[in-house]
Length: 412
Image (cartoon, rainbow, N blue to C red):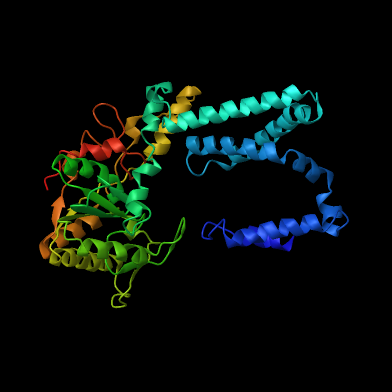
């Protein structure tokens, strides 16, 4: 029991799980089972009638709570109201009891006709075949109406981030994409998730002129030479310096790469929890903006001295409303005839580019960097275009449609 309690207290998002940490709850559960029904905890605690009842419905409870909580997060966003979550726990328990009572028990203890088992086996095979078919077809778009297709367009597929062919050749795990996996790159775009979402439009531009673009980088890690981020991200320590240095080294050494595009989330690195650290140890006491400027200058000058043309893609502003949550919420609200006041007028841009603008202007004055100005294209195109298609997929990232918008706007 102590091992289980330690697991509850110690295992969190920062831990590598599953992994060695999984031994704690696994070993704890095993010891409880091996300790026999007469051990004190088993006899006096786990034999409680209420706990035994929950044990009987535990598997259908696990199955039911998952979709209910998933739809709650689709509807309300990452943090649904507590009253909603408590209500769903109650609904999950009720559905689990019904599943146990009217499905599981009759199958397990009812008619022992061998045909029941055969029918279940055939049904399971058919479900497997249907699932495999849908997977191979990459879904069935025709089953969605226009609203559902709009929601689907907000999804950023895993294949939009990397390919195995790219990762096998280059030192980048999270974002690693080539316009053509069979050719050497002639241009590169590096940075965080914003470099990743600009890749697709820029890739089409390069393919049209016979070039080959590579995208390398990591989420929350800007193209900042010599800088690290010391805070913990959703997947553990960010380790930006360790992740980005091999990428810089590859790009500097590759003579085929003539142009390097830099892109990063414009205000991510000004957040109070964005603890930037100069790995050289020379600038630890300066403001975050100074660290950024110094690092970007170093990045641009180092790449320029390697014979690269360096271009900064000017970032797009954040939205007040998370469009991913907003559009889904509107769709389901309309489906359930709930008036949420959803309207395009609710969606406004933040005026949050002031610090970023100052940095870009300084870089233009003091380095050879070129700047691709995205700002002149915002009106009428972002976050929703003239065809009523979403070009933002959440409060800061582009949809595929938004990325491809820039294909014929680039000039390099």
